[in-house]
Image (tube, rainbow, N blue to C red; front, side, top):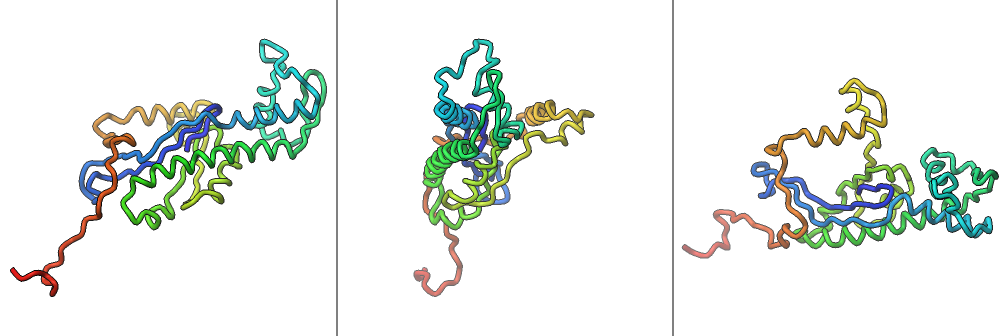
Length: 234
């Protein structure tokens, strides 16, 4: 799950070979993949609505250049980790930010993400050969993107989704890439990670199957055991 500022991409995939054995063509099969217009910015939008009511403010966007844009200010404070201080300086005044408003904004956003996660998971679940549940009981959930810094998203996936497995949050800035290139600047590292991925030649890419190309589940193959007593006479 890739959580950004504006959108969340959720995909369920299997990296294997087409014959499900140790030999064959490496295949990346996406059982289900969706993009949803909900991400970390929704936390800021909820907070704006709550604070407008509490402060009695009607116009939150009072400046065309964004200098007094409350949503932008909240986003900066949230990403810095200073929003929990309980105060925010806006339009020349120190204003109180009740902790309950922050908690509710995060709860509402993470609950929406959870709902979309389960919706996408259900579609992917139908592509698995029965019995699905034992195979899906411990599948790993990888969370990445700038919005993954919001721990509420990781927590709700860890506790409140069916057939949940271990949740792992990928680092926002993989410093190893920067160090390999002789740079420790965090703002560059994530770009180097993208460049690293693009540097793989096409011949090394696995075969990609989109959700519509993944075949429906069929009966599991069984192996005939020679010499069984119930074999029909030859």
